[in-house]
Length: 366
Image 1 (tube, rainbow, N blue to C red):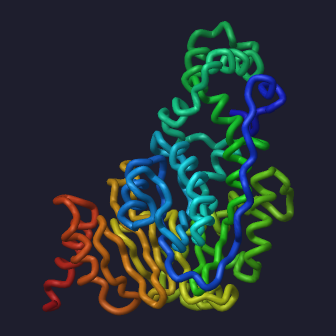
Image 2: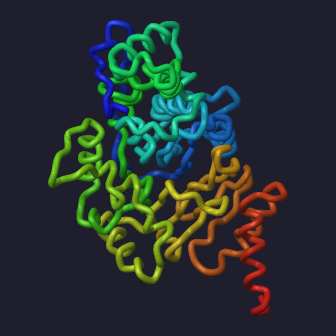
Image 3: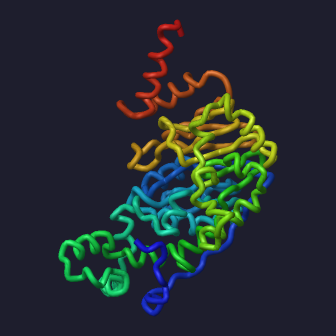
């Protein structure tokens, strides 16, 4: 698979407008709503935004001065990522006009789509890009991109067209160069600071703890343009980079405590909010609340768990299936998890997780 599709082949047939640059940091915000990975599930995303009171029944912004943060991974695994991106783009000026804001962060799946790694693209995502010229574009791509020596091979041809369905060219055009979503994603931050909270898709690994927010965002933007070379490496593909790092989500709290404190001190915050790694099914604090995981598995691909983080002044809540639960940033999490699980349908991942936790404690006389 080619890493980049030459746009010059198709520009006479298709063009995409350029998006608007957003902010990288904000102070003095009275209310924050943060939603983790969406993965192409427009219906669940709309549901959680309505539950949070930031949109109405017609998907218009009604959140006032609220700042909505979506921590990346809108595309892949579900059919409606294009609708989600369009909604975020439409809400941004509405929110700004009301004194609020919409912040869409760059996740590893945004980067993968821009850099040509299409392993997790859902068939419905290609179908959403299918235009009236889809067959013409597909035929042109076959002429240009296929192996000319194998075009007579029926098996090769069948596989090629399966890997390049109708809508594939339009999808690549939208995610490359100055394509509509390429431009929008590049203009979005990878790291965002709002008051005492640092938002990032994956996390800040040890390699980047001495970097500034501006430097990280600039390096990600360069990487998504393809403007990187050794020895810098590609921050958008680095396992310790902000899009991929999982240490804050899965690493030993004892071993990484000093690193977490270093990140907090470096960026001048009290909490790091991350997506990327799926929780058992709701918002989950780690490191005594210094790290807050918000990828609850909203998409149907992960069970459709409805949970968002809400910050109002000095108070922090989980919005779980529409009900506000105080988020304990330290101490025993089991009562909180039990309250969230009680809102779930029978057999949910969270219910199973809580049952396992409770069973593990039973012999010790909880």
